[in-house]
Image (cartoon, rainbow, N blue to C red):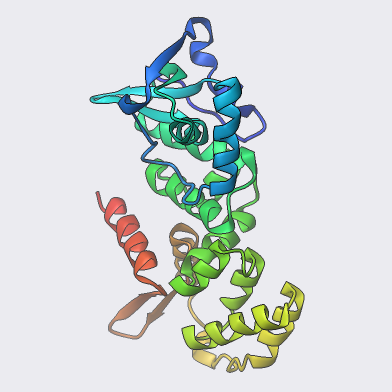
Length: 283
């Protein structure tokens, strides 16, 4: 049985591979037999950095083997996709690799941890990493936070970025606004207002704090009515539990004869994520 990958990022990738330390053999594998990790959370590979690495590989070769898993047709990359991509750019036919035996869950977690340890994921890639881990390993936000050595509020705040409209997510991917700007924009009521505020951030080079003040000036929150203030404790408890589990706003209301659970989403991607979570919970 495969050993648990353990808690926290502090142990490092070397510790995570300790099961097979005694039989590590570096092999030369044909690049065409290798495919990228299907669980790779990184969506963007900076072209300039890849070409720089490719030039280094042309001169010095690949200094650190990639890690792969045997698959039905060839191999899947576990760790080292940048080296794989750069080797292809360098015109190489082979790459040094260590073949490991591991489950899909181990493979996915290692890919996420490797990228998080590099600390150069953009905010949305980081958020998707947490989302993938929670969905595939069936973890709550608290469990994911404990496993990664982070706080639950930090994980929750990162996941909130996935609720942003697609065009604002693209601004984050393009580094025109930060993840902090994105989270602040979520305080606005509708997509159009978010887009207007995001454009203002760019044109006026607003800091996150300046945006917070701007959003506050726009907010016109109605005072909670008595019915909201007296919501039964058990509804509040389950409402909070669902918010944590789904990573989005959830509202539960109840009348004398019926009740309603409202789950908020702001994009098709977010809708599909929530459906996936709900379907997996029902299995």
